Length: 293
Ligand code: C2E
Ligand code: MG
Ligand code: MG
Ligand code: MG
Image 1 (tube, rainbow, N blue to C red):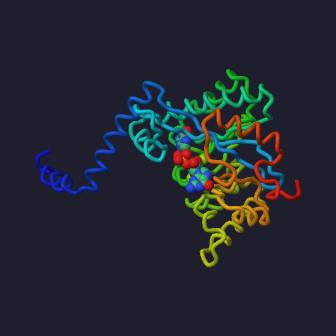
Image 2 (cartoon, rainbow, N blue to C red):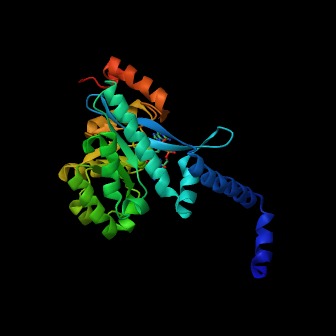
Image 3 (cartoon, rainbow, N blue to C red):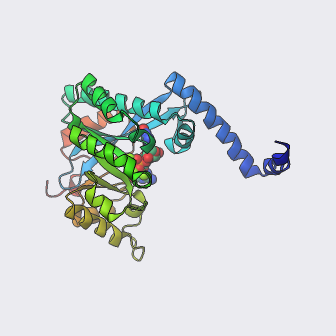
C-alpha cells in the first residue's frame, strides 16, 4: 500500500487521469446497480438487404440507463461488466428481451423477422450456454432460425479451440453465428474455412473509408467479399453512412448493410414505427437506392 502511495498521489494531480478515475467509479457503481435493478434497455438497428432494400433482420444493442435517466453506451460499461463477471446476466437480459420482442412483432404481423444478439466470448464458450439459448427460444416459442449470435472476431480467435465446440453445437441447433468487426482481428484463413460461421460483418472502419482512394479499404472489402463468396458466407457491411458507400457496396455484391444511412439504433417503440413505415414503402426510405427492386 504505502509503497505505491507516492505514485498514486502523483497520478491524482494529473487532471485527465483524475477525470478518468472518476468516470470509472461512476460506471463501476452504475454497472452494479443496473444489474440489480434491470436498468438496461435494448435498442434495435435495421439490417437491410442490399439487393432489394428489404428489412429482414435487426441487431439488438444494449444501453444502460443511469439514475438520472440518461443513456450509457455499451462501450463505456461492458469492459467493467466483463471485468466484474457481470457480462453474462447482461447478455441474457438482452437475449430474452430481443427474442420476446421479435416474437411479439411477428405475431403482430410485422414480418418474419430475425434478430442478432451480441454475445461476449466469455459467455459464448460457457458450459451449458447452447442449452440455455435453446431453452429461451423454446420458452418464447421462437424458431432457432430467427436468432443470430454475433461474436467479435478478435475475441473468438483468441479462444478458438474452446469456442469451436460451441460453434458446432449452435450450428447443429440451427442458430447461426456471425463474426463481428471482421477485418480488425487476426483470423486464420484455415479457421475461417473450417469453422461453422455463416456470416462476416465487415468492420465499420473499412466501410467508413471505402470511398477514399489510396486507403486500401476498397481493396480489402473486395477481398473479404470474394473470400465470403468462396466459402458461401453472408456478408454484412457495418456503418454505412452515405449513398456513395451504399452504391459501391451494392456494386461489389455485398448482401446486407447496416448504418446511420438507413437508421440509427432505436428504442423498441420507435423501431416498431420504423418497421411499419418500411413495410408500407417496400424499401424505405429511398427507392432510388434500390432501383432493381
Ligand atoms: P457492434 O456489435 O459492432 O455494433 C455496431 C456499433 O456501431 C453500435 O454501437 C452501433 O450503434 C454503431 N453503428 C451502427 N451504424 C453506425 C454508423 O453508421 N455510424 C457509426 N458511427 N456507428 C454506427 P453501440 O450500440 O455503441 O455498441 C458498441 C458495441 O458494444 C457493439 O459493437 C458490441 O460489440 C457491443 N455490444 C452492444 N450490445 C451488446 C450486448 O448486448 N452484449 C454484448 N456482449 N456486447 C454488446
Ligand atoms: Mg454486433
Ligand atoms: Mg460490429
Ligand atoms: Mg463494431
